[in-house]
Image: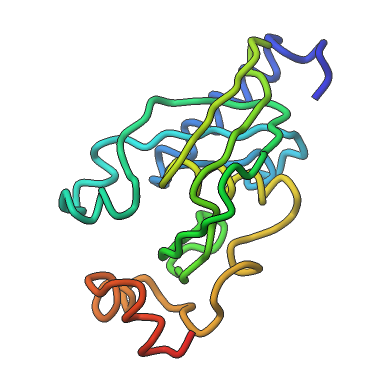
Length: 176
């Protein structure tokens, strides 16, 4: 997006629409291409209500903690840690399914907010996963392009058979 677009009504309206769509889904992130807009814009938010089904141990394992709404324009991602974590991941673009996806555990994203203020966010754990997932959308990549293919399943199946197991055990059982 050009500097002239920052802070202007069309961009502010786009961000509002993206936030509404993300929250209505509900999801933790959304990229403009997911709603048919060819712009380099993402929104992210992980609210307490979205992780209510996870106990403290599951949250800690994922590095998951609530964070406030953020909109990032023209984001650029840098992988800080090449250590990967593998967890089930889904997507609003492919509703009803999920798979194990390896992601870097720590990243830095740089860009600006919708009004043009610079942003630099060093994120680890689940926020780092969300950032990588949403920036993939901006490059035309979906999680199914990165998933461990033998783990692709309907969310109901994942919930019934795999969600309570450690990832290593799921991988072993599926030989993924």
